[in-house]
Image (cartoon, rainbow, N blue to C red; front, side, top):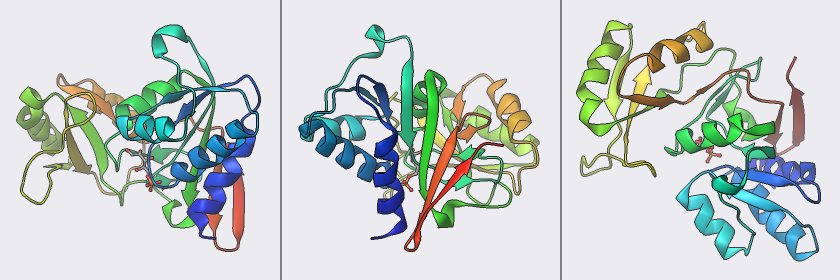
Length: 223
Ligand SMILES: O=C[C@H](O)[C@H](O)[C@H](O)COP(=O)(O)O
């Protein structure tokens, strides 16, 4: 079994009967969602909120009960993936473009459990570009602003140069700031600019990270 599968499946054990559960997005949390589907068939009673249309589709395929945000003020737990994890369990997320809904759901959750392959662990964030969701009309303005912040921004596009559109109808700028010394400060600074919807920097949000390798899973707790 690979690291993603080991970590993903182990995270499903954190979910208990009666919980409201946030379902993250991506190829690692996929294994958590499949494991939860299995546990539901065996009798587990939970209600879930997906963080993307992709995850909503998967949950529906697995007959996982979904609940709307209009009926829920907070969640017990969210399980999600990450693109980079630093030693303080700060993250870069949004490689799949789901960062806004992921961050909203994480912010409403008592506990955020991250699942990742060990290649996602880094000493300092920043080798992976920071995805920044922007209102399409403001894209060029935000990109210029980022260049004044010692960063560079690339509009995420497919192979035909068609911009990627998020589930919220926005674009993604993948932003390179080099190594990030102060992720919280960078997140705050980016969000001051009109047109920025949200960033993929998740700072002080994670409770526990399950990091998988073919040899097993390391459980990293926030210090
Ligand atoms: O937008 C996507 C999410 O933030 C994913 O959770 C992240 O990109 C990790 O995905 P994966 O587990 O496929 O590497």
